[in-house]
Image (cartoon, rainbow over all chains, first blue to last red):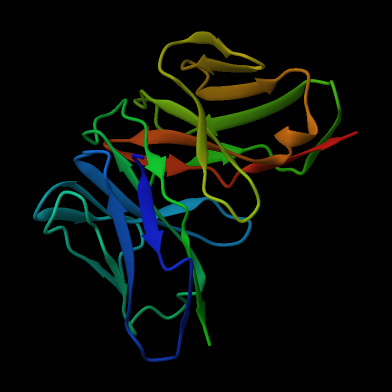
Length: 114
Length: 109
């Protein structure tokens, strides 16, 4: 089955820890995205990548880092510099990142800071 | 970040009625518009995309786009309890998407 997988589904982080969220897709999509969603709010873009070994900051990149070493994978690291990381994190992909491309979402990771 | 505004909810409609959702956007140059449905605790799933002025119908859903007035709407006809969800409007921002905060719809039996 083609799709986007995210792991883990739930993640708990202690203060001062870095954690990495996994995102994998087998849709052969070029573009991948990371969003953050807080209760009652829309999605805010953290980082996006339109091609392997290249990525751009979104609107709220501070305290996050990413890598894109493989087309299928786009992991997100939440660093200790992110002061309020508790949120629902969503990974998405699209064919090429073109203007009319639909973005498809993975099931999400819910991160809680203890 | 380009602004995308949705009518504040929650919106409660009786089963079988029409639910009307509105979305306005700030960038006159936007070209692509999407409606996503998000059930509580789940990720968004695409309902419809629209790129040209006018109406686009898909089953019980109709998207309407008016670029001159910078709004896009979604109508849900014959609303069912399974339509109870939050509906997100998304507009292209160059090669990214900007999302509205969403409108929560509750269909009461």
